[in-house]
View 1 (tube, rainbow, N blue to C red):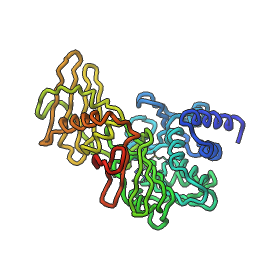
View 2: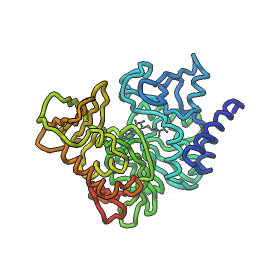
View 3: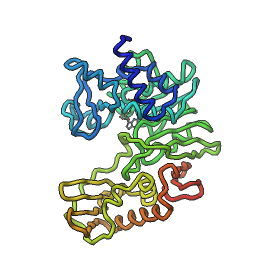
View 4: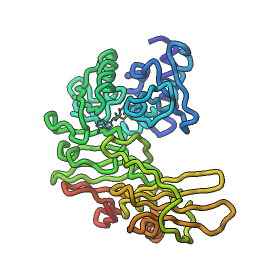
Length: 380
Ligand SMILES: C[S@@+](CC[C@H](N)C(=O)[O-])C[C@H]1O[C@@H](n2cnc3c(N)ncnc32)[C@H](O)[C@@H]1O
């Protein structure tokens, strides 16, 4: 490797190490498995809001390409499941090389050991699979599942060029890969609302499953579960995570506006719900099973609440600048606005617990979120 690349890698390792207090084994893997081997010549760098996204092109502007690859930036490699050319920059982000600090953070949570049998869901560019293969060593094994055939084929090429050959499978990662189970570690690199029980079933007792838990209420959360001999798993939400959703768990498309439905005033400012902190997000999602998002307009702040099981049911709380009275529109029988505000105030009543006080238990029957101890269940 040339000196300039080595320096870039060192700067990245230095940044990551300071940012998340990353341990030595992760830094060493990032040095050993250079990210540039997994980034296409043309890709979309996404340092922040979508309007800041820019194309990197190795041929026409190699300096920007190299600087971006060794920066903190997530790099999107596919739009709209491959239906839209990446150069247009506009579309849903559906495959990427995640931000290096996020990759490092999840590897630290997963804590793979030499000789481990590892399952990854969401091969993407193949970089994480290569890092896992490095950490599992020559006597371990990595199975990586990618739902998109073209993405998987490119990842397999990247991996072969980098001299690593984890087992890459095209398929739905929700099914895991029973043929190669049991696993010591299961690493999910796409967002989920529901933990498929197959991952727990295919993990040996004492194994670790990490996943971005994205119930769709404001923040997303890193989830780290440990499997138990009775076939269940239990764990907590140690920190923040943001990932693109697993295909089968993407929220249904919605197109609500404030032009219809039942109209009534609300004493609760829509911002109270829409900008609630992560602990409240976890509680509201678990208690109600709903999801929410906000919209900031020139003169309005809107908090939408939606039912993933029935897109015809939704509510929107609206704050109009300069107006101290707030309005709610609701469609469908279910009083979604009342449900989320009630859940929010339950959370306030518990003393506003932070994300780290919540946990999850997964059984063959489903998942349950709890507060402080596994016997204090608050919802699914
Ligand atoms: C953020 S990218 C993964 C990044 C990747 N680990 C890397 O190191 O480059 C998420 C990937 O998950 C894939 N994916 C989405 N749903 C999936 C599913 N049900 N099964 C397997 N892969 C899935 C997407 O196609 C996408 O490539």
